[in-house]
Length: 351
Image (cartoon, rainbow, N blue to C red; front, side):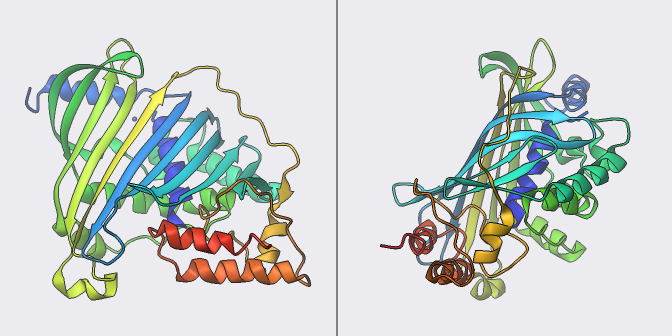
């Protein structure tokens, strides 16, 4: 889950630069235009809630939010300055991290300190993206994504104001298997490039059998799209998925019986003058990965919080063991258990 998050966040950023009554031709035409119009820049706001039932300690929904500006770049990574927060509804700790990209440089934020990915690694990611996109910056299909194919049974719900803009609200059904197949294609074609920039290994693609089983357990998946009346540009995409876990699979999933996922992606100040600059005094990512045991990626991206600035130790110092203990703690903690993740982060705060 932690490894998938940066790649899926990048998918949301690329998705924004798409260049993508009952089920009438008018509504279909509106969606076709909306998913063909580009968002070159905007202020992004992502809110998601994950609710899992049946397993002890998972009774509270997990809230995930990501906010910040982004700007698309031709033939390379989007520029973005995104803050990511994960926490429980109704109290508990909130985990805060971040990711920043200028297109040519990429940074992860850990304990309020920015660490830069090797520039050669980012350059290779950009070369890969440029080859896939060709001369068309908005070619999502070249990256393996076709979001227009995710939507079915569309219905016009009338007008609604979103982020200060008058929009047409279209609701319908989310084709979950189409989404999973599309994300599989995205991971196969572009996951490595985005993983190079984020420092996280891309998630493994799902098998056809996994996708089919996932589609069978999902109940009544819905979507909502809000399209600008004057410019046919998407201002918000939202959806909800509910699912039941088959009884034979519950034990290996920690007793989870059912759950739901709700999400909302909103764009404001669309095609504005978003400014994104590299942070000053960033450290090389190797400073952190060496202290975490020498791995090539940053374990548990998203598990840092607080305002303290850690002094990253070398391998011979006592503090190095704290970082190794922290990494081991993350491996044992459930991604949705923010209190456990906070206890892991506390291991870095030496008296």
